[in-house]
Image (cartoon, rainbow over all chains, first blue to last red; front, side, top):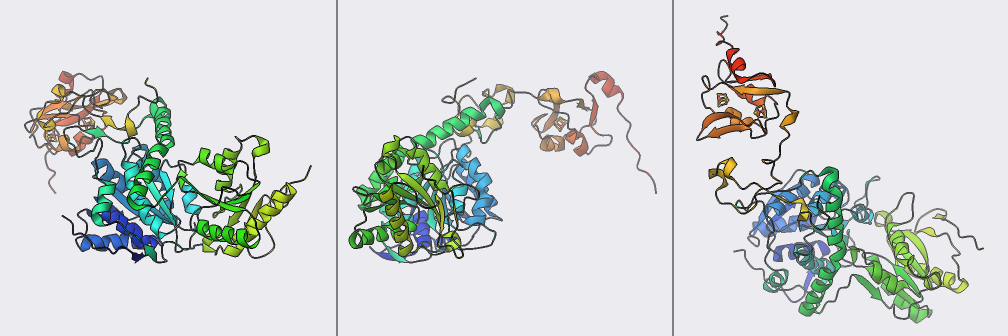
Amino acid sequence: MAEKMQLNEVEVWDGNYAAAQALRQAQVDVVAAYPITPSTPIVETYGAFVANGYIDGEYVMVESEHGAMSTCVGAAAAGGRVATATSSQGYMLMVEVLYQASGMRLPIVLNVVNRALASPLNVRGDHGDMYLGRDSGWVQLDAFNAQEAYDLNLCAFKIGEDINVRLPVMVHQDGFVTSHTAQNIHPLSDDEAYAFVGDYKPVEEMLDFSKPVTYGAQTEEDWHYEHKAKQHRALMDSYTVIDRVFDEFEKKTGRKYKRLETYMMEDAEVAILALGSTVETSILAAKQLREEEGIKAGVVAPRCIRPFPFEELRESLAGLKCVAALDRSCPMGAMGALYNETCGALATIPADQRPMVTNFIYGLGGRDFSVEEAKRIFREQKANADVGYITTPVQQFSGLRGPKLGFYEMKRS
Amino acid sequence: MVGWDEVTHGVVLNSFEQEVENVAHIRPEERPYSDFSSYTATVASWRVIKPVYNRDICIDCQNCWVWCPDTSIISRDKQMLGIDYDHCKGCGVCVEVCPTNPKSLLMFAEAEDLESALSQWPEKKKKEKK
Ligand code: SF4
Ligand code: SF4
């Protein structure tokens, strides 16, 4: 039996340490480690936990992130509870295997500490990597701060391992902003956390010699389409389990999570739609604007990037005047990913109830996103709302040095 | 063809129709292989040349059994019995690894019959003196 760790009611942890603690409390059987900045401390800390007897499982050093995810796939297929962590280039290298994991319906937990993609080389955070895996068939949860990184990791095991889901789950957090800044964290005790996550019940495990199975078979046109449809269906339907796990978590801790988080949206006229640590910055800006300038500002934030909260988004944004979808990644030749998905949800609303949507690219490669910048964005939405059309380019680069950069001017007809 | 709601979860294919104990001790022909098992499927029609096995020379070293990529060497109680032509694809690996002199396995044209193949077996090669 692994040693228990005595935790205080309030601990001071950064996002990485919080994630590592959640993995320890879930008593993961196999963690494959190939460290990459800024997620390194997750597996590093986990390694120390293993070395000090706090974990019974295996800690496997591999030769690359491709190897790390491959090890995870093998260990999960063998019947173990499995997790790892990555960022940026490492995540890119994992992508090929991410599809194997989800196609085989293996409930692996992957911590993605979001970081910019090279080149230019940059260890700071943006969401370029997050969007890279959005069609890979994983449940994707987004933590806006360190406490949430801890909480969502515990939820991730429970969601992915549910027999109605059986899909791998990613937990995102912002590189450095969340991963390396310490906050007060309210952890569960080891016993409570493990009781919440529950024992792992493997399904069709390869180490059950009385029932040999083949994983990852070749299917060609005979089966591929049907398997992908079934997998898509499982991910689409996983929201019921996600909701249930979030409910159970609230009952245990009082901390409430929703697939789409909304702040001050009851009477909002304009809104910012964002992910990651930017959500808290935007909430602060909205509060200040409400007090100082009377702008009815709200914030909407998908907690669950996959399955995408399509209906919830449509409901919370209908009737609004203006929405700014903030993308912390450069879409290269298109509108931002969050913008596009939001517009997809809104296209189902009758035109007279549909808000105007603009797209802000911001904070690339760790460029700071300030309350002032969020306020500027809110004010601009308000100005658009007042005149009733988009006065600025639809896509703008916020916080960029040099002349203004934007695309798609709206001509007033 | 099955519909999307009937395909197996995660493309996991069960080798057997039911659970089995001690598979290694059950003869292949007596195992309850499922339709998804490669045992019940054959792509041996790809083969253009085939290995022929000569019992008289074989020393039962099991090399061919270990190396055959298609588990097509039939061996019981460490004794070589021959080749499973339903699964052998004619790659020739077994012949390469056979250590006897002459080899106990040799490749012949697919159409060659066993008797004529055995009649053409080479003599033991003398070691060349330097
Ligand atoms: S030819 Fe290849 S497939 Fe056939 S028995 Fe020999 S090694 Fe196996
Ligand atoms: S490798 Fe040759 S000698 Fe060895 S068991 Fe096979 S046929 Fe016999």
